[in-house]
Length: 113
Length: 114
Image 1 (cartoon, rainbow over the protein chains, first blue to last red):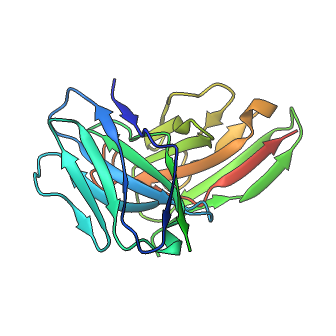
Image 2 (cartoon, rainbow over the protein chains, first blue to last red; image 1 turned 90 degrees about the vertical axis):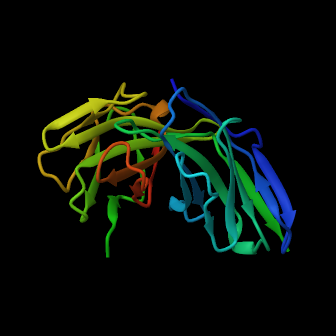
Image 3 (cartoon, rainbow over the protein chains, first blue to last red; image 1 turned 90 degrees about the horizontal axis):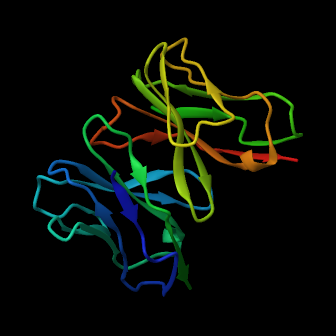
């Protein structure tokens, strides 16, 4: 069975700094998809970025980028020039064809002014 | 606007009083699912539906029921709620189960059972 592990329950960084959230996963599949979801205090689940395993190039969305290491089964999220609005719970997630999305337990990120 | 609409946003009820949380999507998605979110446990799937009249258990189905009579609606029913069902609930939808575009989520229902 697939698992997703986020080893950092909580983190705090100063505004404008760069922060990296860790995620590892376990699977025997070769083709799958990975996601980072953001959950701000409003509770809405927002898809931040996604990565397809067969693509070697790391995904980027504005200030958000990932470091996808397929062999190491690692999928970390980097937030550059962090802003107060980045304060949220972040969930790493995994899915493969014909299966549900599995979520990690989340990392609560605080951006400090 | 493409969205998943979930109601109510907050609900406080007493043990044993039946309740329904509604979920509706306007994207013509075939796949719909319910998750519950608890501190330290992340999101866990309760039930899912691959299409109309096709539903199946997720990882934590005990104490819940669902139905899918129409493609757009997927209500979550708690026939006899108990305090351990106090949680944050999310409805989600997608074109298919293992979508590479992820799921679209509703805005969540905070349920408290006293």
